Length: 229
Image (cartoon, rainbow, N blue to C red; front, side, top):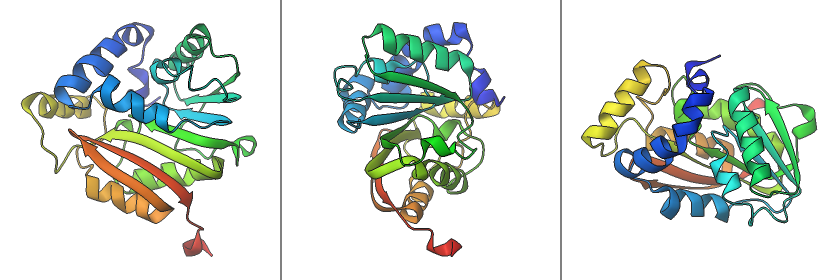
């Protein structure tokens, strides 16, 4: 398993929300969880079926149970069984009454046929910067795999910490360097411009904006693979 996934031990998951969603988001990445990321997440949740890629502790869906009241299915996809188990338990404990599916799988692998055309929202919060490789290639691979899962009119939305061409403070610069050395991040050369290249290649409609050093994006209407014809 990749280091970006093995870091999520049961112990790490107990402190993840405080360390990442509170302290790091506020002071290093400068992208507030309660003021920016959670409202962004809730704004784009689908009404019928939602796919959560890279589930972490399950904070976002669990904090959005009221928004998920009409959503019949939430599928959790992650490479780490610890994160899947915690997210599923947390979502159930928060009161979600729909169906929860857990899929232990790398997002670099094509999705099962059963998932295609199924979801009106796909979340990629803090996923891309954890993946090895560089933009636009690694984002291309992710978008190639997840776009078949979108139902007509569906939306892909996410956020990712950038490594270059952003205004780092001393803390974010230190953490990004350290996390890349440990293999937890793979974003040293990730920029807004090369993420935009991938969004442009795979979607007819997208929006990309910056909050601190975090790129926040939504994308709709996957392009037909003309290049492959």
